[in-house]
Length: 304
Image (tube, rainbow, N blue to C red; front, top):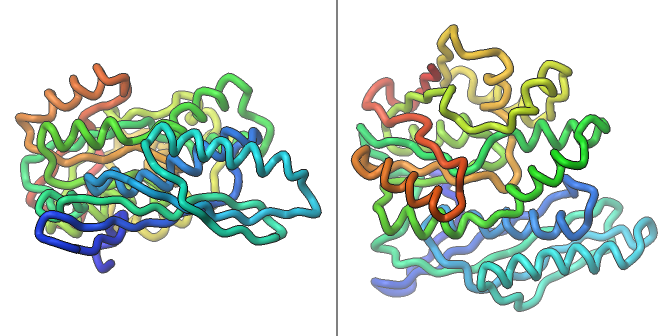
């Protein structure tokens, strides 16, 4: 817990440990089925980030029975179950309450060999960093609430948020991985800071290589900024050094809280190009090398 790893791990035997995680949140898209898919993918992601295999899940539901028709809940649960089936995960139960605000997510149990478990503490100097999904979902979610995001954009972003990190997890273990975390509520720079601090090293980010949704630039310039972005920036700003050439809008995007974001993978420099090629072949077209691990300054992020 001290390292803020993505999930809890409990060792059962020398070659078997269980991974446990839980996550749920309010709707970020209007379509109930899509919301169920995204929430399930997001909950499963923590197991994938640690190199594990999710096995079972339980639904967590808060539903306003006096405000919404039960058909909405059925669609949410259908989206979640379909995503679990895609992941090879068995739904074994859950809990629901009548609440004023709709919320949905999963409690997930998985397994991992503790000798090959991936944490956010194992990066090595000289490693390259790979990001597997574009950034900007928090900003786009804010634009959606303001009626500024069109249907095509929402559909495209939904597709990414609903995509499992399963393939990326399997491939990083095949090629070789030193550390990993998924990019969620603390944003790209927040989670990168955790990886750097826990590894006792620093990070250099090549901002022009970071994949983002192109529409976020105009939304930032329209001040469509989620509250969580500001909180991330306030908390992590003293650990970040931006070069002058980094555009202002991109500085916002790098702090943007993500929902069901991609994996940030640290691996040997000689393996990075191989992994990117495998990820792209597997359909993860946006995977890119976005930076490197450096020995100094430890715990700091330099963004060029």
